Amino acid sequence: MHTSEHHTIFYPDDPEELSAQSARRPELTSKTDKLTSLPAAIIAPHASYPVALDLLHQSFSAVSELCPKLVVILAPLHQQALDIDKPQFLFFPTEEGITLPHTEIMYATEIRSTLLSLFTDAIKAENSYFVEEAAVELTLPLVDAYYKGIPVLPLLTNTVDADQCRTYAAVVKKIVALVPETLFVVSANLNAILPSELALDHANAVVSLLEKGEPLLESVRSKRISSCSIAAFEALRHQGWGKNGWAFTLFSTEGRACVQLPKQIQIQTKERLVWHASATRKEV
Image (cartoon, rainbow, N blue to C red; front, side):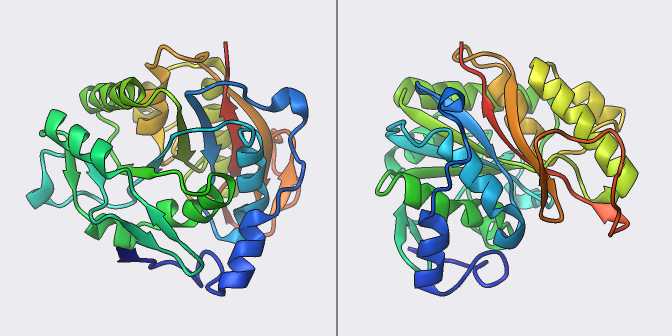
């Protein structure tokens, strides 16, 4: 078992406090916004709990009535893959699971082994990236609170290469073939840390594209968008289940929430901002 690396900084290290924050389920999503079938996908932001916890609960509450047999976390890698690990560009953690301050979470080891054998040129089990990357770990307490005992399969990547994104889509498709009752959690923020006005422009641009289910890679190349989870969104865009688009329910920056993104900065307290969001992939 691995041991958590990012408690204290991103989420509480006190077991009782972490359990309480993960378990509280404010009724933030109306009944009509709840998803009704699997496979399904949600967006869960990655930031410290004081910033992101309400949005995390907003996303998970939309799927709280589902009963997945597998939770897959599609998360960004905020560093370059080492040359020794190439040509692989998707990374699994090693070991059987992870020990958090308040519980243990088991990985889906059989499915991991199957995917490693089928996509040898694309996927590698390498835990060093998970030591540095907090996005998966801060999501796990919510996964445990809403789906206690369900195995988890985390994936990291930083690719924006079109061919690799298509391979990523094939991996996602295979996961659904193996376990149709899968919940995908896309750990994503709407933009990179940018000057406040540019950050809002990027956030509005990516939300518009995601709502319509449109391709993202050209907008990455033209530097119109900068979300760190482009590859995961592209992989899900190529899936045949659900509807090709996302429904956004809540946004925030610096802990201030709003139901719609503004078109211009209203109150500026920092020169550089990141926008966060809660969303679900649309159902048919």
